[in-house]
Length: 215
Ligand SMILES: [Zn+2]
Ligand SMILES: [Zn+2]
Image (cartoon, rainbow, N blue to C red; front, top):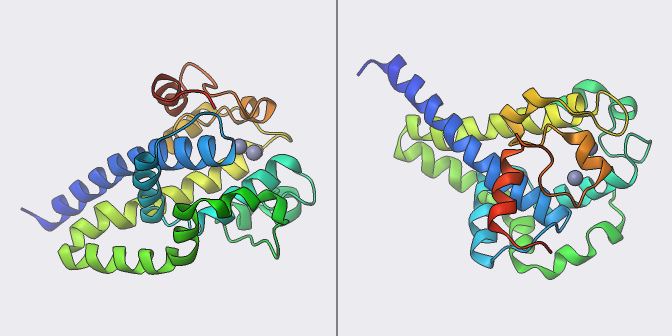
């Protein structure tokens, strides 16, 4: 088979895998469950979802969750860790912003979860191992199962924090759903962070509502 066709197939598989990760790992587990405790999930689901998040290289989940809680508390203000107005568009789009220290109250409960602590400590090791093993299996496997999900997650988070906040307090931007699993109704989410399904086209919200019991 021609090499260019194999690369194309790898990218298509990578996009399908990225959609699975963005729905189950990023939206349902990381955002709706860990950040906002909208419902309960079983431990096996946490383990699988966290693995997906490590594939997407979200770095430390504890840092992600705590900074997202800070973002809700200080939306678009100077203490919002990724407010475009204060941090700058490109830094937010490329997720190169940093938080010198996160107040302990945003992360205190997270350290009681051994699965989160494990990923917090070893995310770099898991990242390197995942990339090396994927590449050793095959460069095409690496593209589909490691590289595309990494790029896709970067784009998704960057777009959510910039375009999803083009107006203060969050904006509803339906095309964002292609990258962030139904969370394009971000204004709706800021209005009520406990609301599971944000819109009829909120696909991850629909799945969560069907499968999990409200917390
Ligand atoms: Zn927001
Ligand atoms: Zn949120």
